[in-house]
Length: 470
Image (cartoon, rainbow, N blue to C red; front, side, top):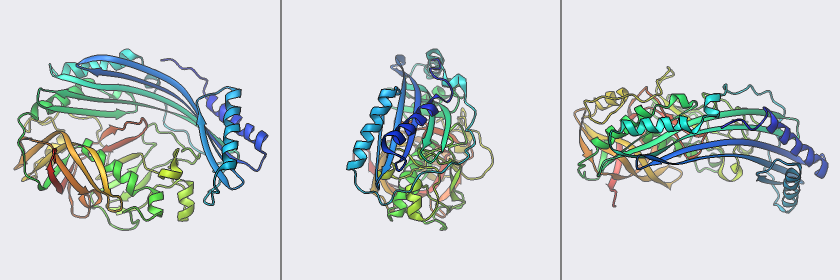
């Protein structure tokens, strides 16, 4: 894939939109324009063969207008003068018909914003054969097991401008691989997201997925109950995603629908949660043009903050934390680059080949956590999770891709999938976390640019309520 733009061309388009608003609506109109050019590429495989390679390049222009006390946002995929004018005219028509918006927070004033991380050009313009090399390595490492999954690369360049005179531009890249290996009766999975395609090793991931699949054969059924667990990073990612959406969401907090109580010890002292979009190549600003920076949500067990956009921040009497997103007026600001750590020391982020003692190909941290378990479960992954009570964040869902019984620190046999019902904050509460690994694995989301990074966790209890069938 080759570049199709000149650096900063998105900023020119955003500025043109603001000029059109001033020309058609006058200086009293408040306007924000965000222009994003995305190059997305995906190599998908199934039955151990690549069956699809797709790539798309598209431009999205988003305009938010506030006129006479009313606010409306609209978007389109065009960059011609006629297209931009049509977008502005359509949005002006809509805003005149919209409801009054007494909570309008105003525009972000001109603010210096440092550039984001340097772009990895090799990832931004990766060719299909480079993704195919990772797939080939994954399939070969599975050593005869049936495999399926994808390898993707993305490159986004975005610009923001508003009628207060604020403007900024930046670009990001991401690479991700998600693959599964299957026996006739079991499966195993391996996932990883990174800023650079070079950091994805298909052989390492394929070995891991195949090892898990072979170790998951001949599962036994266990009775429901409360078990000590070691959750691997893929399972922890589900905790982070739900904690972000429902707990650290400033809109939900303002409405009294969040468990979060800043200044209170709500988590075990071993837990620290930081939303850090700029740790890698995240964009340095949000869709309101507010600077993004690391935000510590939990510091050694103490809830410290929730995420805000300008609207939720104004209602809370504080300032935006740079978490505005399209649709935020309805859904609220959500941390989307959340990392869980036990310490601030650097951590290795690439999965390791594992501890053969357990037969499940776990990384060294997971093996160390298992060593302290007298009788419990090792859980690879959670899925189909649904919120039963948003306030206390009680969630029900299923395990998948491997569950194992642990006895006296050793994995003894595979277990059939289980249904659980658990309060995520309670599971991570004071005294509930018995161990936190140091090897972080960055888990990709369905949406590029969103990721969850965590080590394995050893928890004192997890409430399993039945088998996968009920």
